[in-house]
Image 1: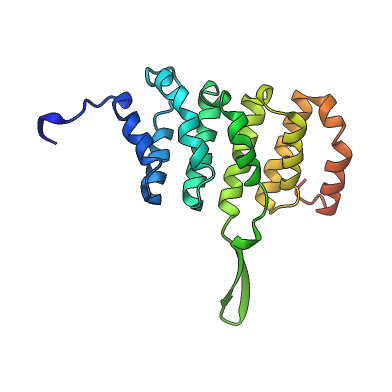
Image 2: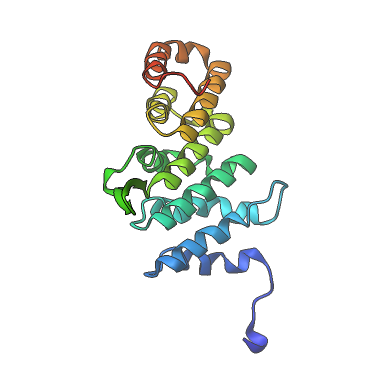
Length: 205
């Protein structure tokens, strides 16, 4: 790089990262989105005002990427932003939420059976992605609920009660949080939540 190297300032690399986020290489796309996550500090930083108007451009395409790893990186970055600095993502939530909600559903195309000796084992390649999606919903329910349609949010929270153990546990915490933050809205769905918990046996409690 010689004398033409850029100073080690995050803002100098934002245009390059944005280009990488749309690279034909999924490894480059994944790396770029992960790099954005490490720009988000829990304390105020000079990068915030430059990053804020670009978050939608970084995440909107990545969260709909054809590669699981890129989608997961986008959701983890979105979760980090929502947790540490919600204002970075609040303005683009309307664009991002439909894709995030889609990841709360079990994708049967990613579920397959593998043979392990005399036994057969079901593998869900989408489980880690769904866990990331529900973790992001949990954070958004705490930090950005004022920017969400609560009833739409609760409709997708329901998906967690039909899922695997770890996701169910996180969903119970989300319901508790909803009870504290918006009890009137939750009261309109509590029967549906209760029915789903009964179907699951309620053993997680």
